[in-house]
Structures are given as structure tokens and as C-alpha cells.
Amino acid sequence: MKATFRVLELVILSSALLLQGEVKGSNRSELFKNVINKVDPDIAPFESALTSTYVTISLNIMSIAEVDEKQQTFSGAYWVTLGWSDSRLSWDPKMYGNISSVQVKAEKLWYPTSVCMYNEIGNDKCFDAKDKQLTVYSYGNVFYTTYLDSVSQCKIDVTKYPFDTQFCGLAMGNINFGTEFLTFNEEYSSFLLQYLQPNEVWDIKNHTYDVNNVFIPALNSTQQQIYFFLQVDRKAFYVVVSTLLPVIILSVLNLFCFVVPIESGEKMGFAMAIFLTFAVFLTIINDSMPKSSDVIPYFTIYLLTQLVISGLVVVLEAFVLLVHFHFSTSKEESDTDEKPRLKNKFRVTGVHLDIAFFLFVLLSNIFSFLYFLLNVIR
Image 1 (tube, rainbow, N blue to C red):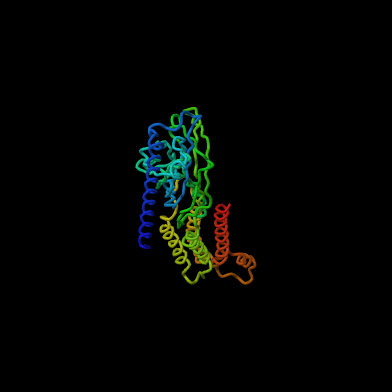
Image 2 (cartoon, rainbow, N blue to C red):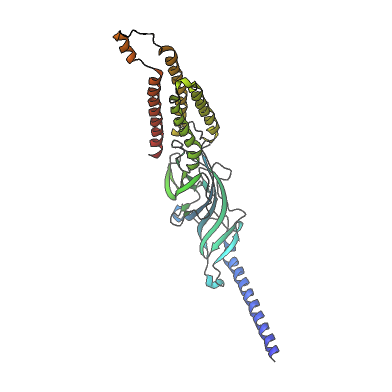
């Protein structure tokens, strides 16, 4: 008897599940039949500018690929979600088995095709939902998400390299604003760093977005655009350790050329060795320096100044040796002659020149470093 009741329970449960599945299937079919399939994909939901369609853009940056100083470009990877309102696609979930959202092929519905990136230099400048799945919600909003590899124009200012800050981003707008009546909804748009992967060179310090009205003189009309801004700071530690610190050490070594005794015969060799080291070192780090013809980084000015000072040290050391070996040898003077003794007392020697040139190069090094430092940190 128990076995009979158990079999009966299983039959009733199976029938209920089957009926529920049929109802759900019927609900979804009815929803597509009564709502989704009745929308003409060629007809937009707006009639005029007064009934424009609200569009939201959610930008989620994943990584910074490159900031190219020479090409003046900013490369990044993003997830982009576009959403818009379409009152024709709204329904009461209670009438369709509490179904609140469905996936629909883009070809079955109208979607905006005129939202483009104005400062994009890649091939895909405009967003296109073709061959994508759209998510339609019962309150009439439609969304889709796409992946974007962007290379955008960005004015790179390397004046304060390697402590520079760059301001880049994406400018988006409706290129057919005269016929496609779209309004960017600033309140529901967003700029996120949810999936951001750290970059080895750049660090994002600030990110924001803004919707502005831009006047187009050629068309004598105003166009709405949405800007996504990024403030990125260069991570200067590697450049300081690998480039700036060795240059400072070489500039200090330049001073010791005037400390080496004249009689040792190593003064010129020491000065030439440091000068050649400077020249070779600057050649090596040339590839890592930002290349820009518009502005010259203060760091480049500092490096060139140190190279000039190093070359000047070689010239000054040659002058010291010339004075010491050719003009500091005095003739034998009489013990009773006071004037020659007075002249001998104030005679300039190679040691005196070493002290004077040491102070001159020291002050030059301090001034050039302070000039560089004060300009990059202000």
C-alpha cells in the first residue's frame, strides 16, 4: 500500500513540474508575441527632440595598455555597457509568470548606432550592437555590454618627467544628433575601476565623467557630449633609481677631479673618464626618455647641463695643469728684494685654481639640480 501511495506522489509531482514548465514556456512565448515581436526594429522610440531617448553609458576600465608620448595617444581596455529607454518594451511581470527580463537578439529590436568616440583613432569608432544579445527589462530599459580596446588621442605633457601627470580620456557623442534624438543621462551613467589591473608605469589618481553641451559653429547648433576623464601619474621610482641617481653620483664624482693631486698625473684621465661615462650613459638611457618636439622635459635639460659641466671640467683641468707646469715656476729671487716677494705672495697656482673651480662646479651642480627639482614638484 505504501509503495502505491509513493508511486502516486511521484506521478502528481511530475505532472505539476511538467505543467509549471509548460506555463513558463507559454508565458515567455506570450511575452515575445505580445511585446517583443511587435516592435519594428527600423523605427526608433522617439518622435522628435522633445521625446528624445535617454541613453546611459557605463565605462569600466580594465587596464592601461600604453601612454605613448611620441604618438600622443592613450591606450586602454574597457567594458562598456550602453543602455536606453524604450517604452514600447515594457510589460507587467505578473501577467507573464513574473518574468522581469529577457534576452533578445539585437536584430529584432531598435538600438542606437550613432554613439561614437570622437577622439578614438582606431577602426571601431562607433558602438554597434549587431550580433549581440540585448537584455530587455520589464520597465522598458534595454542594455548590452561590449568589450573595447581603445587607442585615443591625448595631449601628453612630459615637461615634469618623471614626475609628470597626464589627463586623458574618451569623448563620446551622438554624430547624428540632427536625426537621432538621444539624450545622455548623466545621473545613471558611471565610470568604474571595478576590474582594473595595476600598470607598471602609470597609476590612476582620479577618474570622473561629465556631460556637456558643445557648440558646433559649422552647424550653428549645440551638441551633447559625454566625457570620461582619467588622471594618471607616472610611477617615478624606477626612473629615479635607474637614471636620476646615477647622474647625481657622476656629478659628485666630477668634483673629485679637483681633489686629485696635480703631481699624481691622473687629473686629466679622471676627468675624461667621467665625461665619457656621462656620454655613454646618456646614450643608453636615450631610449627610455620621452620623445617630444613640442616641449623639452626639465629632466632632459638637467642631463644636458650635467654633460656640459662634465665637459667643462675637462677644459678647466687642462687649464689647471697649464698654469701649474708653465706659469707657476718662478725665477730665483733675491732675499733682499721686497717687490718680488710681494708678487710671489699673491701668485696664482694650480692649487688655487683647483679650489676656485671646485667651488664653481659645486655651485653649478647645486643650481642645476635645484632648478630641475623645483620645476617638477611645483
